[in-house]
Image (cartoon, rainbow, N blue to C red):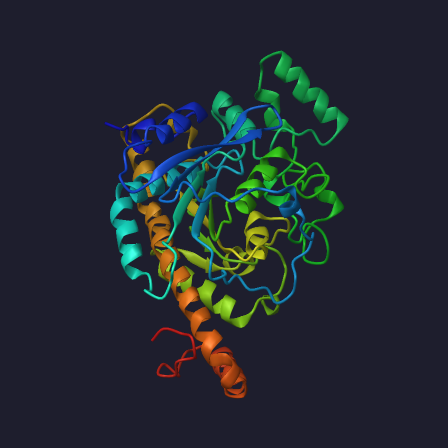
Amino acid sequence: MITRASELGVHPTAQDVDKWFLNHQGLHNSISMERISLGKSVQHRTLFANRFTNTPDRLTEFSDEKFLTNHRLETKISSEPTEDEQVVILMQSLIHGNEVLGLLTLMQIAERVLAEVDTLLSNKQNLRSSSLKSKPSFSIIFFPIVNPDAYHVNLQVNAGCRRTNLRPCSKEQEQIIQLNLSDKSVFAMCYTNAVDLNRNFPADWDGQYSAFSEEHFCSFNHRGAAPFSEPETQAVKKLVLEYNVTHFIRLHSRAVPRMQPLLIHPFASFRPMADMLPQTEAKHRQWVKLMRLRGYKVGTALEAIEYAAGGTTLDWTFSQKIMAFVHEAAVPNVCTDRWCGEYKNLHTGNSNIILKQTIKDSEIGSIFVKLAPEDQIMQSNQTSFLHFWLPQNLCILSTFGMFCIFARRSNPIKKLKKFICWGQKK
């Protein structure tokens, strides 16, 4: 019988996490599992992800040309998937090496979803429109430890002191890192900074919306020498582009207790919402309402926490026309900070409070997984309908579409409850 995720405790090692996922191989009738090797971290630790799919033979041929991307977002972005795309969900955690609650939540989501996966896939196939010719394909990819070097440091000292990866950003810090590696002492690693992996993506990495200034160089949120300069962010890029990801959620945690949990949609940077298509904005806002649990703050980064950052995974995945979200778990009151170091190697008492919270938070991921196939079906059906209807009704659609957008945006208190825009569900 497979070990429950909660039995691994509050601080599972990378080896424990890897083994836990591998133990799922062959346990599910409707899906197969693929362990994806993504290269090595700065300190040569293995980067791995796990893909669960009902179509193992439908991998996309990978080309370096797919890595070509602009360093800034295009204006008027839409995240609508194309008709022939499969549903590919990517979930990742520990891009910041001290946010262990994100890892625990990801594992609880995996346990929850995989336990129901046969039923989920069966329901999804029944929902598919008969007009679609190809068999639906569905994949969930879990990338649990994006930043294994920092996570290793935190495990060694039992403190959430290391956020960034271990790429030195100055000669002085390089000497500190090398000295402590040779002495097998990691305490000084807590007092150096490197690249914040969640500032190392192209979307608003620089420019007027980036929120980066020279004072951030070599700080705890240093963005790196260039977008995708780090092997860890290159691994994320490879997953997104090679596997044609359509839906993405990244799992974080707040810093200290008594901070509200968050559910954030694009943009994370200072980019204005006017740069997003109105229907795309409405879709993201609808999804956070469907996924939010009691007590959550939702919205863009500025709306939810009055904070902005450029170069994030959230905005880059969105720029790739992916439905993208960030979940930030609340720190339980029994912990002093996000690492919950008081409960290392404990599996009873207050540590159960921590694990119970991650089980509760996993409901968001479960809802997200169930929304994705519905979203894909809706987009495919709308596309087929448009091909037939749009040429004959362009003028009517344009006029009505403008009125629809105006009515929604000028009516924030939603008095027009009976007014349904074209393309919206009642």
